[in-house]
Length: 99
Length: 99
DNA sequence: TTGCAATATAAAGATATTTGAATGTTTGAA
DNA sequence: TTCAAACATTCAAATATCTTTATATTGCAA
Image (cartoon, rainbow over all chains, first blue to last red; front, side):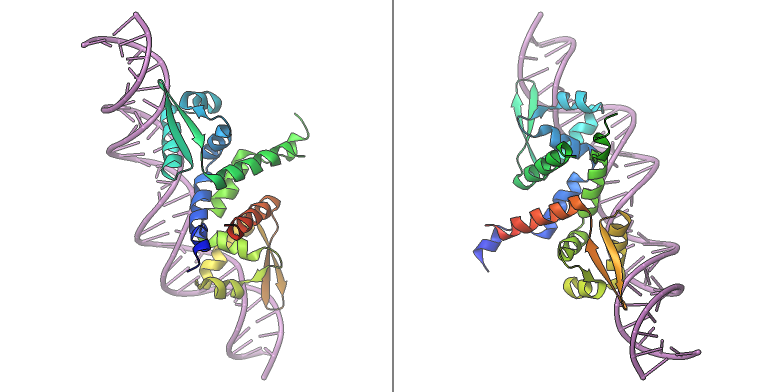
């Protein structure tokens, strides 16, 4: 097997990513996290959704390696770390700036 | 309200798109359709999945305005017509060529 | 070391998605 | 006008996802 192909992400894996992004809250969270990241209470303020709901969606994003959590005192800062997801989020950002 | 914003796609709509792409078969179909498009039996040959299943997923893609069907004799050719989806599919294509 | 603020986890019910199997429709050719 | 090929639709069962509510955990300050 071609070793170059080993690095390639499969359609199955890509679809997994899209499925995760296929929820408005998670998509908003991911886009909001682009750049410096945010802590949970910031996201809560932004979205006006109950905290457990946000934590649950963050847990899903974490489990898939899309975001990473880092403690800062009593807060926890989340960032987007998945390369493909970063590209997609930036694509959306550009789309929103257009028109 | 800003008339320019009216053209902007919302997170809700974008998430809808990702949800649709978040299924391996649909993602494969969309990527396979890029360019000249394909008819159902071509897709069937490509994916080795039962025909009704393919038609069902095509119906979902059609309902969301992601693909369009055009009859050609006894075949029906499907193409991707959704601008954002085309961009995303091309992004994936580029990713797969890399490494 | 007690209490609060920030975040995480669990469980249950409601809802949505996926699939397989059966059946319908339309087209072109004989 | 009948048949076969190509495609679409329907329905029900299995499975997965989402939301709510309640309860844990962790770190910091008093």
